[in-house]
Image (cartoon, rainbow, N blue to C red):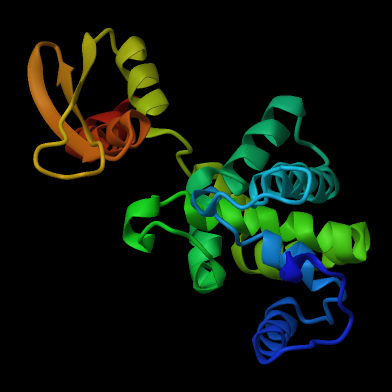
Length: 246
């Protein structure tokens, strides 16, 4: 494929536009554009190389996830010297949660680079976080760890990582509600079912019952999202009682 060639200087108008957009985003000069182009190719295009191997962002996403986790772990180790392993793990999970990464991808407007055969509104919310991780992977392959470290520091740590706020952030409303119910000896049920209706994309609904009473409902494109949505609504319904028990 033409876009997989190694290029130092843009050769086409499309390459040139992509190069300067990337340069403005990264705050450094990208060298091998094909890594970055691959970071935004959705599997729905079904692209393959000459050996039949898939060309999409998923392997870069895996790589970027590992690098992002290591940079955040290093930062937390230095900035929270009194934190034990459990604390550091929990804080890292909050920084690199799917919700946080999706927000990062949205704030950087990475979706504008994505090539896909699926309408962007139907791809799903996680595309934003996935391509952010793929971008980190592309930076690593192009410029190495130090450039990744600086990019993550500038785009993630400085604008988003506030340890005091993170300590108070609830990473999973479902887990929080279950823990609260167990602590206060309340019976809880998360009832889930497929609720696609007339929509093409599959949807799920989750109803939460506390002590036999229906409290809240959540509906989303995945069971996990629907559970979190419903649990969050339960949290706000019982917020005063929850605060009294803490």
